[in-house]
Image (tube, rainbow, N blue to C red; front, side, top):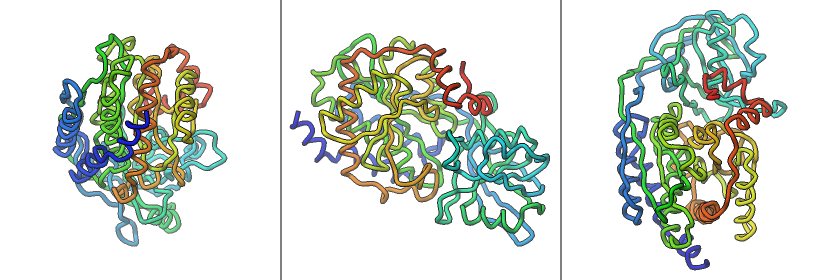
Amino acid sequence: MSRWIGETFTSDVGWDHLERLVDIGDRMAGGPGEREALEATRDALADVGARDAHVEPFEIQGWRRGSSGIDTSDGEAESIALPRSPAGTVTGPLVDCGDGLPGDFETDLDGAVVVVSSTVPDHYDRFIHRREKYYRAVEAGAAAFVFRNHVPGCLAPTGSVGTDDAPLGPIPAVGVSKETGMRLCRRDAGETVTVSVDCATPMAESGVVRADIGPDTDDAVYLTSHVDAHDIAEGAMDNAAGTATVLEVTRALLDREADLDRRVRIVCFGAEEVGLRGSKREAARVESSSIHAVVNCDGVCRGRTLEWHTHGADDLGAAVNAVADRLGHPVTVRPSQHPHSDHWPFVARGVPGLLVSSEGDERGRGWGHTRADTLDKLERRTLREGAILVASLVSEVAGAEIERRSPEAIADALEREDLAEGMRATGDWPF
């Protein structure tokens, strides 16, 4: 056991791939950078010895950034368009809807330019996703949406809008920094402002990388990540680090391949940042019974302590704790549902699923979804430690019996955790 751990803790395979991905630059879904990242990941998996590494393309609604702005009586406020915002120009009164809690939209917003924060207050008992805030503003009659970062540093946040049925959102949407947003709300609340978005929306091609290791069993443990990133930054944490971890885990597992009781299928998705398009397609085309469990790496290198969402699967929680105890490493296990990454389309169909991320010092995404999501925030040590834990966990899960939950049980859990209402508001309720 100690040999493979030592080799993983001194390996540069994952880190080198992390650097390869961030150096591509723009990896926006459907663009040439995403395609380059998919092909580079395919080649890296083949190089470490995974079987049948290939890219399967699929079509998506594309989105290409143009210019955007918020014109006020004092001049233009700096902003960036949110992906899948429609192009358009809207003029209306600016209304500060605070944290964007459901009750904050229960006012006259007809024709308004709505500003909401990217966070939720500590006293509120659930996370409210950006898209829920957007569609609550739409339902209340807003004409434009302004997403204000809660993290200081003059960093405008990005993040997509749109739904599966209507990939382009109905109203223009932009992100602004905390500082710009606070200034807008202080000086322009109630005043007339103009929001403009220019973008191109051609059809485009994304893809999925697949490869296999381990025995050729009927069912497989899925080890997953996403390779795409928002176009404004390197996407180092979100999610080049996740894909680099998957590669390092693959290398480590191949070193002990004879110990695997089930096949491990590596699947690295495109188009996660625009509505989980790659993973939704994969989940729909594969028989759920052929997937033993999903281990999805998204945001794994933000901190040294890994956080594991088990979605109520007690057997997965037990597996995580067994690995942590064996390796003497702290972990955080959260049994709650987390319907916002590539594991979710599988979990919603009753497949046991783990979202592997990491604890950070800040609330929310931190540097994620901003220009500051860059390689300098990450450490080799953190990636290596995480890869050791994830490799051990995948091997543990491959040999364990994991009780499956029905989609009805998952839906009931979402209701209990007060997540169902928000998913219905965004058109993401799959039950």
